[in-house]
Every structure is written in structure tokens, then in C-alpha cells.
Image (spheres, rainbow, N blue to C red):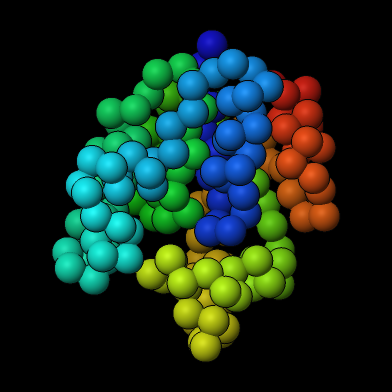
Length: 163
């Protein structure tokens, strides 16, 4: 079976849905953010602060290409920013885009301080980032799931049915 890649903006539930899919299918889950934190022994905010976003994106690309195993890969929200990653995703598995409206993301992330690119004091800047990535998610996706107002179980069932 092909690798299943979960993509979408931060806060859309990629890790949670990945865990649920892994449990329901028996496939191994790799969370790219967790992989990076473990490999480099540093939190994502610390990597951004000490080495910069470009270094983090390089780590992300390396992890994406290393962790292709026929299981489930929960990607970071910015994985689609590099064209090489979009091509890799499209050519190496089934890409599932977890779509969520911006206002719901704002609600989910308003107290999350572990995301270096999320600043709830500047919602216009965050919406600009969100909108700049939409086309990338949409063009990469084999399957798009609107996850707003759905339970983890409903989303997992919808994905497994479509696969």
C-alpha cells in the first residue's frame, strides 16, 4: 500500500488524525515534526529561533524523503512551501488535505505558544500566511477532507472509505 501523507495548515488535526488512522489501519505513523524534534534534540520554536526557518524547512524536506515507508506521514503545515516537497508528495503516495476554515484555526490555536509562525496578536498576518498556502495544499491533494465540525472518528472513517 502506498504511503498516506496528511497535509494542511497548522491546527487542522494532522497529528490527531494520523494517530487515529494508524490505530484503525494498523499502519505505522511518523509525525515529521516529532521526528525533527527527536533527531535534532531541539524544540521547533528553538530550531526557528536558533537556526532559522530555512534550516527547519531543510530538516523537514530531509525527513519527508527519509520516512517513506508505506505507512502514514503527518507533515508539518509548511511542508508544501517547497516545490520539491510538493512534487515528492504527489509522486510517492496518497496526499490527504485536511481542510479547515481560518476562523476555526484561530480558535484552535489562540493559546498555543509552540508554533513559531503563529502570532495571534497579528491575525491579518496569520490569515495572509494561511491564504498563501491554500493553493499549495489544493494542488498537492489527491483527497480533500473538510474537517470542520467533525469528530476524529468521522474524519478517520471518511478517509478510510475514500482510500
